[in-house]
Amino acid sequence: MAEFQKEVQKIDLHLHTVNDPMDHHVWHTAEELIDKAARLGYTALAITLHTQQFESERIKAYAAERGILLIPGVEQDIEGSHVVLLNFPAEVANNVHTFAELRKVKSVYGDKAFILAAHPFYPNAVCLKEKLFENADLFDAVEISGFYHRFWNPNAKAREAALKLGLPLVGDSDTHTLEQFGTLWTEVESEQSIEAILNALKLGKGRVQGRSLRWIEMSVITYKVVGRGYMPWIDYKKQRRVA
Picture (cartoon, rainbow, N blue to C red):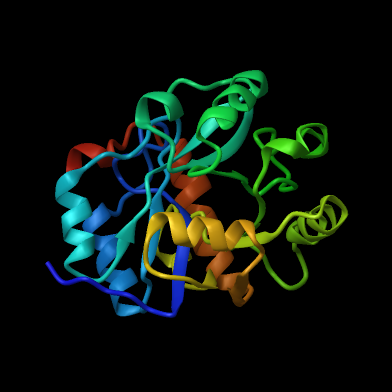
């Protein structure tokens, strides 16, 4: 297995695959996501399924063979709001559901782990909104999310909040369909290791890169993520091989 070290890491820390236990409409496999990432020059990814940390030695090796580091992660439900937890032990990440519990596990694992405020001001009940300010001490960074248009951009409030709280920004795609992946990412100067990347992000060394979506792209993504999401009679998971 080849070892890769690059001065600038191209990363996305918020990604979903067909393995997701909550979103039945997600179609692509982890291999398909990693193949596209390799073509686009990514060097580190976090597959962040809802409520359940992704664990697969086979996929970890598959990514490493393509020069990509997989960072353990989960998009956890914390008191009804989505929070991305990175590099916690799986048994911890899978069983934290309140801000009090999160504060406790951060005191134990915070040096190596990373807590990201996911898409905090999007118009959805699962977004943090004011809870970001109420629990600001928990977060290592605020997310800029890839689903936006230049005339519709909830990330503007996220930028304002990060500036007010003195927190760095991290750009992610929140990929639920592969059309989302590759238009927004973060570049960070560090070695290609989990600890080095997360530490560099905590220090504000990450740079959000990419572009806004076009209306046609947003329409396709909305249909596949929202419209197709309301078709429970279609079981996409049964049609795809999972890790």
